[in-house]
Length: 137
View 1 (cartoon, rainbow, N blue to C red):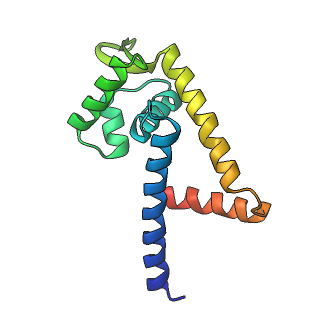
View 2: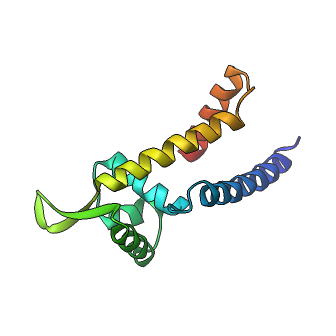
């Protein structure tokens, strides 16, 4: 396969992957969209962050993130707290409910990945993981 053909195949398969991820997230957890799951995960991993940090990290418009954050707040999944270093700044943190639903959805998603990858040799799994990390870097 020529490199141009490989790039075309990668683009096509990544598009299928993204569509499938959105569809399965909606089926498995209709109460938590893929975008919401991603944002909650980042807030947890960072130990709390500003909405502007989310916008910068995901290269999204601030108004888009603002709408998403507002929905997560209404759902009781995140809360704003003053930054101890600068009381003017609001930092987003997961609530107990937010942490609970994120954990539940993460476990379910991992189980779905394990099922989908059943039968793959360990070396293929290791290489696939390395390639994804490299691609996303």
